[in-house]
Each structure stands twice: as structure tokens, then as C-alpha cells.
Length: 319
Image 1 (cartoon, one colour):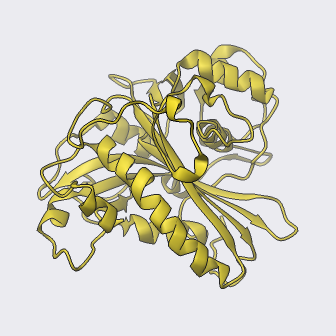
Image 2: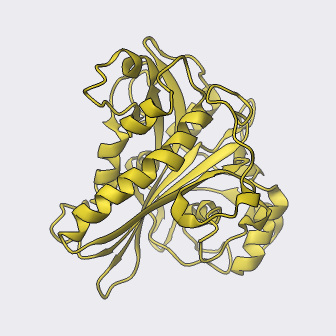
Image 3: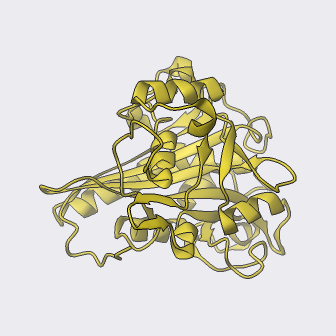
């Protein structure tokens, strides 16, 4: 990941968050995928790491907030298909923040409150428009009044006798993706330091905290089931009654991938994609300078790690 960052010129000046996400998905992921495939094959696992950056991002509002806020900048998902078992899924929503020597400058108390409490929220915007979200629900067979279908409460697990997710589960589902731009710029080029660091929203003074895992380390832990929030339901529900809102949210975001089982990405334009998705050139928007702000208000990324085989030898956490 550091090689892609450095070769892309992101270590010069202060890049935009979107430029960093685009570099991560378009340039770094294919390199990581090639290394991981060979390494995991030796222990009997097949793996695929892919992703996209689309134009437009989900915005949400919630009661008591002074303004709407972004749901996040990208989604990390690990889908594991064990031998002879149902699909297992863990995911985390990440909000990218450029982290300078003294910390984050672009602070957003509304979104920090969302990540720390996760109150019930309503979609205010969606890639391709809110009509595109409604179209997705129609394709998936999800019924019910529009206002209810656009509302999410990720504390709702959908399990009888377990109506609310624990605070630890809520925290597992979101992270700040700190982009340590000044540390990377001043670091030894031979060290190959990963500029991305994932930090809990519950960290003390999160905007100056230097806690957290590098993104590479976090991905390994996500694959091992040690981080991220489990999404127990991987099939679309037919109604909002007794459904796991977190699982539904993850499926909605995954629909941005053109390769998703249920996808409404036909109305979505893309900024970047991993080569393996074979995205048509006509669906990619023109590239912009690395430091440009053109896509700053409208981009969302998906990073999906898919594995198949036996993960039995990896230490995994039970939720």
C-alpha cells in the first residue's frame, strides 16, 4: 500500500481524501490481491480482493442533529464461504480523515456523534439518487412504505430475544480511516510505512489520537474475524419486520458493486475500480489531478475481500 501511495505522488503536499481512496482501490488493492492469493493458496484458501469508487455517497440525518452528515467514505467487507457451510460476513464503515502532525483539521461533530451513538437515521442521499435506492429495494423484493425502507437503526439485530446490539458491536461496525500524511512524508522511504490507520470513534480525543491498526493489519484481522461487525444475514429480506438493519445496510452498500448478486449500479458512475471487475470504460468518469477537490463531496468506495475454504486455523472471535 505504501508503494502505491508513494508512486502515485501522494506523499507530496496534502492529497484529498478521495484521491487517497482512489489510489488505495485502483492501485494498491490489485497488488495486495496478488500477494494474498499466493500466500493464502498455500494454506488451502482461495481469495479475491476487489473494489470500486463510485460517484456519489450516502448522506444521512438523525433526530437532534444540526445538519446531515456522510454515512462514511468506504465500506470494508469480508465474505467467507466455508467448506459446506453458509456464507459468513463481517463489515465496517470507514470515514477517511487526513491526519496532520497535530491531528485532524476537518472535524465533524455531527458524524462523530453518529459513530459514537448510532441513533436511528434516515438516508438523505444515495449514489445515483434516492430513486436508485428505491429501485434497488424493488429488485431485491424488499417491500414496505418508502419512509420506513429509507430508515435504519443498526441497533436492531432482528433476533428474537436480542433486540439491541451492544455498544461494542456498534463500535465494531465503524472506524475512522486516518491518513497520516505528514508521518508518511517525513518517514524513511525504505521503511514502507502504510499511511492508512484505522481508529475507533470511541478513542479519547479521536481527532488527535494515534491509536489504531494500519489498514493492512486491519484487513488481516478482518479476515480472521477479530475486527469488524458480523452481518448475520446475507440474503435480502422481503420486509422490514424483524430484519437485521446492519445486515441490510451492508447489502445495500455492496449493491454498488457491479458484480453484486442484486445490484442497482446501472445508474451509478464510477471514479475507479480494480481491473478484475472489468468495468466498461464508458462508466468511468474522467480522472482528476491528485490534489484536486472535484470529487471531494461525492465519492464512496467498496473494498470486498472474498475467501473460500477452511479458516479453522485462524483465531476467530465469537460475537
